[in-house]
Length: 528
Image (cartoon, rainbow, N blue to C red; front, side, top):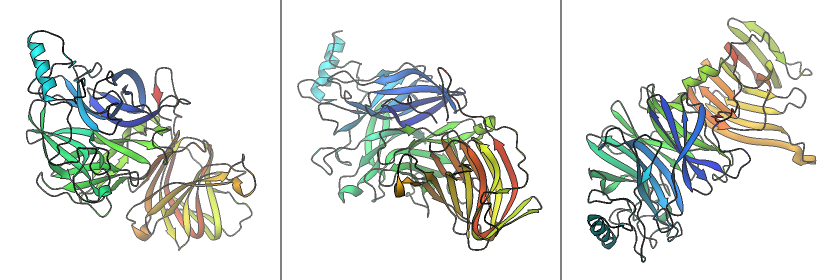
């Protein structure tokens, strides 16, 4: 898990990953100050090395002299071999209540130059008199209050168009949302998407995705919102992905801290939702797409403290973004983990965790084991003292009882992670369950629900399960689709097993692989 320096007061914020010539470039916010956009590089999307920061706050008087927010990097369509970074800026003068979108450019992805505008005498960015004055001084080779040349082809910073979107502090929430730019090209047009708000309707239901079309190089004109669900306060960090004949719009919602998506068949079609449009479970936020030689990937940050997403954030490894035959999007495990997997271990016959429970049966069957606990709970231990691993198996349940997995479980206290699976309803819930030794009495019990997820169950035939623990990162896939993705630091090593409570299980096709433990080396940040 990529993060800021452990023990510091800084945390990683919204991220964007751009792939170029075999190298992944990570650009991310640094919270809580938002005073620069950091840059790291990786060859495998697991190891990361910090390089020079991309851009910093503007000087006092600039339109972006208070905070920098979410960015997006793409090739410059007007200058081959160069790149543009659209980013969000806030000003001190407006106390951060008004958001705009600015531009930085680079010829190598490492050194960036901003188009920056100073404010003078109370005038805001792109004030016509200020621009005219700058052009006159530029023609006379005199210095100007505008730090980089602004010609008739430039319109930065971009502000919300009042004919379509909330654009003044007197409207709505008295806070102008216009952030998280995303640029893409479609049918020869350059389109800039921005998280904004329509002008009318219930105040906390105005969140939309604004659309600006590039009519000539670096000049954008506003169009009506491309998406307004009528449900959310904001649709943050919008993305567009085209797969085959389908278009997908991905966004994040503060209301439940989930990443959702909408779909359309063509450019002019209305956006629609599937019965379940949650792409990533709760805690994963600010999803961004990236395309490399193997296809589309989804990246995000994970909030360890979901009550405060400005501290203690981590960036999980990426997921592969896939399209099912029915058009529904799903995520599968990043293939880069294969480099961390060690040879399979032979665990032999499962052993009992609760020796005093005699209402059980362990019987070898073709391809695996029949495990039965007709009364009460019993855990069948497959392997002990394992830290990082990937477990693949087929699990089927007979009866109406409960089942699931335990891992990083202490043999004495039984403290560890408990993964509850309802194979009939298609539900998973991961808990950190154990003893809080620093507390007394009834407060000593630790019972934390870390994350929940669901899938369409296949019924009595069981499910193909893949469970991975890699440092602080935990991932569950069912039928090849990621259901849970999170980070937790409560437990680091212990037994791994499957449990049954008032039912019998068929555990077959079991493959248990240890994984090399993530580490941090000098000059590199490595998942873990």
